[in-house]
Length: 395
Image 1 (cartoon, rainbow, N blue to C red):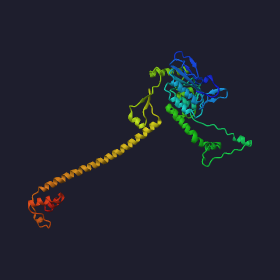
Image 2: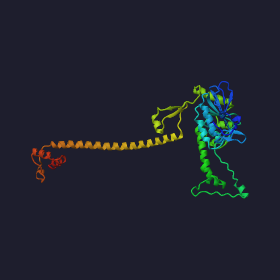
Image 3: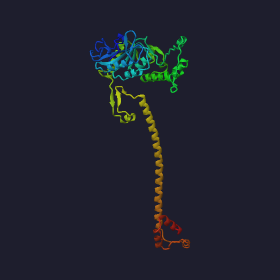
Image 4: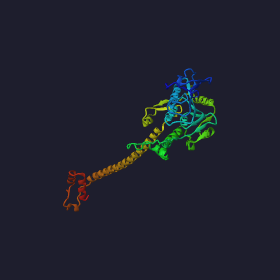
């Protein structure tokens, strides 16, 4: 990995490892080519995340290089892949940082396959908490640690009035095709902060709250509304999991190893193909599982909800169609029975004796008076006409 210039990195920000057997720290830095090759297997990587967090690497102005969030993500990924590392400690002391880069680093932590804990030495605020919430556990060093500040804000410095007093004139010209260009910030300069809250700060705050709550579902209320808490109160509110020195973080990782029953203590990620209906429903090739279970993201859960609702609606339509078909089938059955009954009546009528009543003999449409004539006449007629003729004959 290349960094511009010849800046060195402060020792407190340099990644190091805690060896498995001796618990001796072995300093090292990715910037200097450190790759954990010289430490025993089963060691724990310690990656400092300190100071204000920015997306890209920075020159702090005092001759030191400061790793940005992209570099921190690369260091976490390297430790996760190295065979000598069995787990990772993120060593935090940060008030937070920029929105840009935070979500990506938090996702990088969430995707780590090995056990990973956050150890707080000082402060875990805002963007730093966003990132730490993706760890398996959060441990504060002592009761003086500050935890929280879950939320978003913008600080603006308006120097224009100062320069205007010096005779500087400002002209802000916006295209007719882009009337909303910087409109929220222009309104804020005039003292109207509502547009920037509505269109920027509130949506970001919602993303922040939803993310940490998905990682730590027990969080709610004013715990996620920007307050900062001392460690003991943070523990009560479930913002952290315990209080203790860095050795307690090491012990927590070792306990995870025992509980998982794996010598390398990695989170087993396998693919599942024995759920074909669910895989088809989610439009994925396979489902990933860990030793903790199979997890679906919010988008997948929403998709399942929508398709279940659609299936219920379709089932109701099918039931209605079945009811209609059942009614029609009953009508057809009754009609067939009536036809059979009429055919039986016709057959019986054909068996009647050929005796013509006197009243019928005088009729203008009189039928033949002999039995043979009646049978012969009926044979030349349709069934309905034969029945009508016989009935007119008085039978």
